[in-house]
Image (cartoon, rainbow, N blue to C red; front, side, top):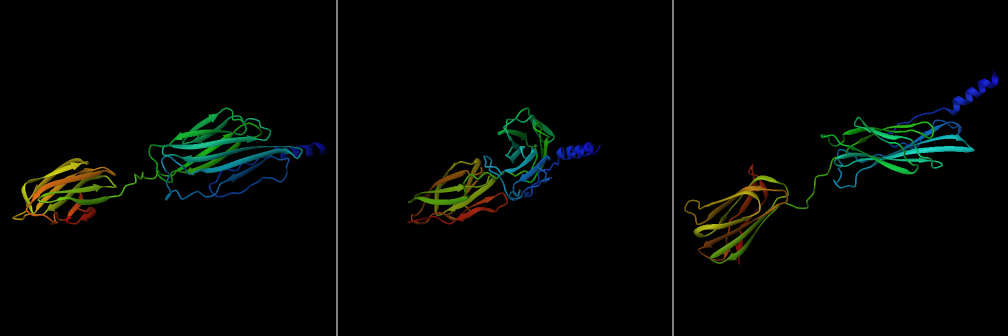
Length: 300
């Protein structure tokens, strides 16, 4: 009877198993027992990730990866065994990705390895020791920065199952930088009695409506010739205010992000030299300057 009780107690020690879950905080090592004959699980996770509310990802990567691992050991000093399930998780603009690697002392393959996220489970029937399998889940139609994605990893075979419960906070996609800046410039091309000036406008942001307006000095003859390249829905108008010798030119329309519009103006004048245009401005639908005004162009 005494011998039977001792054997029963030893069997209880050998079958002891404790499961740890993944955590986002930095955890070094947790062990359940100092007895090498008992089954043990050791969890290791990475450090803190960048703040999801203020950090974004490039559409083509690189992406922000969270990783972690869980190791289970069993056996005795003369015949030890171990297996490890490790993962790397990240999101792209359209997907949540979990890469799972299985390793086993002795090189034996794992049975089923599965990952569950967004209420869906994906599985692979066999994963060789040292091999990695990628599980890809489509992101919800509506999500934003810091959207929390709980996910779990379950591994069967080679001793008791490993079950990991983890989470990942999604990172928003950085706005596309097309490498342009808003600018508005003017240049005097011809300064005789037949004059020509060119204005160039580039908008960093799309403008559903803009109005460019300015004057021509010492104007005479028929309407000025106004040629516009670029933009959408462009209209031009011109008039002479009161008894003035100046001519007012107005260009209206819309402009796409990083698009450049060129306005070439030709007109006749009663004299040569000096300031050939007045100040020109470009404003949005609310009458706010999109770019600094261009002061009068001067001929030498």
